[in-house]
Image (tube, rainbow over all chains, first blue to last red; front, top):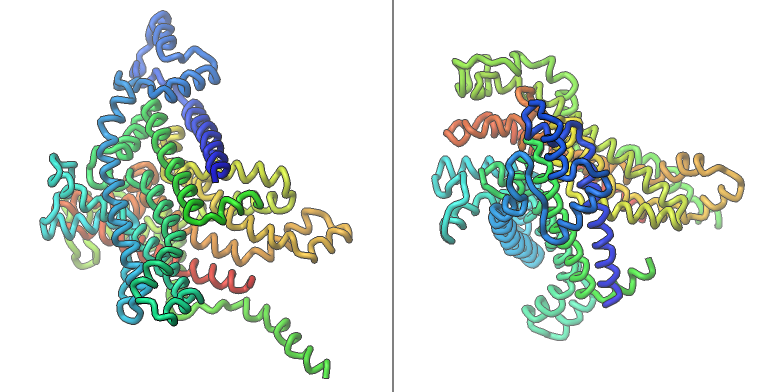
Length: 315
Length: 291
């Protein structure tokens, strides 16, 4: 087990190194000088240009600049936005809270509704199951931005139950402001989790050890809890983890749709304004979050199913 | 006696290809096929069928509801919504098709290389895929927009690259299984070259899975491309595109006139639902065939 975790962590570091290189390198290749945004097309005296270049290390070779950026990033300094004259850390710190709240809220919705409906559909056959299947088919086809627009119209404009824009202040107000965005973000994932849960639980129900337990006269609730759900937990944990990881990038869409001042919406804005330091910084933060979530899922999977760590060596 | 035993086997072998030619899809499956056929038709002919100019509107008709000759009304710039839907079908559908085809091409090539050479090549390619998995499609598209400027092409290319590891991982497994078959080593011993074996034997035998993957990817690509256009980083206004239309109509929707956004959402959801349903069906058919 420890060996498995060590191997996954080593792969994590390697992946992050290559990914950080790709993020930095891609924006280095972008046409146009980063100073152009600063000077607004004016020609500056060469001494001033040299001063600016030295300040942002623009006169150094690419690999040196990458190394400076990476070592600073590892120490928690993501550089400075050239057009805004502000530290990327500050810009991120102002917004990361909103994104974390949104992703956390959405994850709770996914776990409650996705897993709950899946179990409900698998255990309650007949019309309950049909209802669950129908609901999951509809919400699976609803992309986050489409769900956002529909929810805004129904619950915001027509019914007036929830605010359609902005973040809100204080706990209750924040929850109120984030309810529709979280629902929009959760729609597709809930459907996916519901389906996987339903299939996993149903497969377990049909297994021999469950039938044996039932025939020995164990109470149904004990059979479900100890024999069905415990085994079904393995695929369910994986799919919940994967969908939560995918929320990290998708939050950009929902944040933009609801005018939330989060990381994703700001990344989109920075990409439009060609604010490279911010794009690099936020991309790095998002990739790190995404990759770490995936590794946590992998390790959780191995803990739940000890066969995995043995199998990985054989692969 | 022995002939009687062999007969049904021969029967099955003879009939197998005939079954494969017309897959069993069921009613919903064929309905999906019909929706996709209409979508393709609109992608090709939609811009020509548009009864009014999809880009230039008349501001005096801003957010006017359906009237005679304009069954879906006008958007905030007074442009005919039906015409914009018809004209937008092309970028939406061809864009997604481009993503699916490029991702399938890259993914299949990687899978075949991995399966054919195995060993170090396989390890190296698998490690490359692991790194690519670290980039969610939308994030890659946003970075691409920052580097190359916001356009449908940069968004589509970024998505294709982001999707290819998923294709490669699924197909690598199938290709490895096929590679291990005795008929491949038999042909190899007879001196057939790698190109011929991969292209004429390996590839056709995993083609059902490739088609299923392509269909599923097309659905994902449509959603993600529309999302990127919705963010303003894909197809650029004033050009018509379903994703752009959703975001164009949002201000009007918040003011109580939802028709523009909702009609574009409806088109996207209908095609995506059809494509993903068909993809699932094809995938379970192709897996059933292998077992």
